[in-house]
Amino acid sequence: MKVLKSEEKKTSFILDANGAIVQNVENFYRFCAERKLMGVKCRSCGSVTSPPRPFCPKCLATVLEWTELKGQGELLTFTVIHFPPSQFQALAPYPVGIVKMYEGPHLPGIIKNVKSEDLKIGMRLQVDFESAIPKEWPRWPRYFFKSAV
Amino acid sequence: MTSPLASIVSAGVTKFGVREGLYTRELFAEAAKEAFAQCPNLDPKRDIQALFVGMMSESYEHQAHIAPLLLDWVGLLPNPAFRAEGACASSSIALRTALFAIASGMHEIVLVGGVEKMTHLSTTGVTEILAMASDFPFEQWHGISFPGIFAMMAVDHMHKYGTTQEQLAKVAVKNHEHGLLNPKAHLQKRITVQDVLSSQPVAWPLKLYDCCPRSDGASCIILTSPKLARKFTDTPVNIIGSGQAQDTLGLFERDDFSTMKVTRLAAEKAYKMANVQPKDIDVAELHDCFTIAEIIAYEDLGFCEKGEGGKLIDEGATYIGGRIPTNTSGGLKAKGHPVGATGVAQTCEIYSQLTNQAGKRQVPNAEIGLSENVGGSASTGVIHIYERGD
Image (cartoon, rainbow over all chains, first blue to last red; front, top):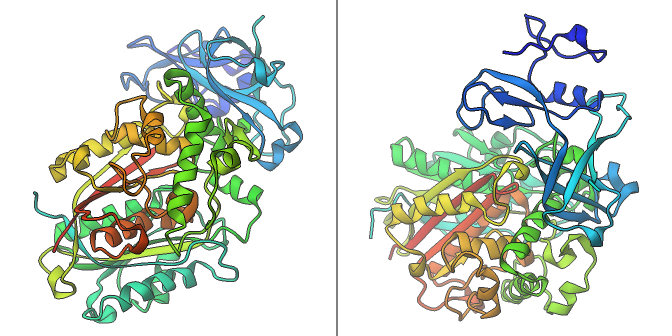
């Protein structure tokens, strides 16, 4: 397994007994604080999974290594949320979608800088990151999508 | 056709809707009272050996550990009581659990039901609790509501098959029409396609009238081993097929958003077990939490080809009197969707139909029925198939 050590990073990560960054959701979001969209690559079948999991969902192998995604993808489906959960009320109406990343994984997220009427299945999108980190759990800086052009 | 898994000998369902001041314990007791009253040969205290009940969330009324509570409220202490949770499919999972108990011989007469109390909370409050059944770190955290999840299924279906917003609206119109024939339905109102299309947007392309209401309610059945059923009724309804399947919790992790794989896979198992085919189904209760879900269910259950769900509603085939009447109760859309109560409430409707007690909404000569209950973003799917046992 490729071991990403904590000393290489300014962010504090959850580490295993060997000092390697544990492949979990928490560390996925800690990488987002460094503006990196991360997945894990299976050493057996080569498939890339994001968000990271302890088992490769394709072949169930357990030896995976961190890999950084390019952050580019294509919109698979979308909607425009008019009636949001309370913490998103200031944003509504806002588009969200599911994006197939270049490396294969699907990720859902809010789409910014694209008008609702311009949303199209198949359009190219690019990931970006919010800088704000919430003060209480879950302290997960959000990634979001924007137009790739 | 096939040897039954278990037999339903009585059923009770509350009026669904805004039941102000009544909480899960009283609602469940109301449903049980009806089921007991309709089964005079049964002495509940002496005969019922266990309770299996579905409820989605303790957050609605700040009440967990409801299995002993509901058992107590219907006078059945100290029997074992089990609560199942599978989001909107909770009570269908309770029913499957009860089938296991009867099939194993562990119990012979059990009470099975479901309940949810929702309307004392604001729409926002309910939206947030329902959203808990989606993936927290990736869907809820990114502002994706439950209607948003089904809206993304609708957009994919519209893109792949040309399904229209008018076709979605027609599902709502039909189920409201059927709901008018069911005195226990929450929404008692005739609507038009134009009413649906001009209603307030919730998550494009879904509007308010594409969405089921939040409701209070409870449902229950008395389930026995097939050999005991005749002691309690001359008109039992047999459960002859049962299937369940699971998919990823997050919608985003799937390859195709225009299908509900769990419905397809659970139906395959249930059809095979019951030895029936889609064309044999006389009446079906489907999980129309949003109009698109009923269109997709037509396809995944084999009532029509993939992509032709919109055409099926255009043809009117799923109205009472049509080729395959669906949601004669009004469905989740008009009858209401007290989440945990829904699965067994579907069973109650099929029981009414197959015992010729459905009144104005009776499907003539219905012999075989089906219920399709989906949890979350179709992460859980449960299908049951029923036949007249008289």
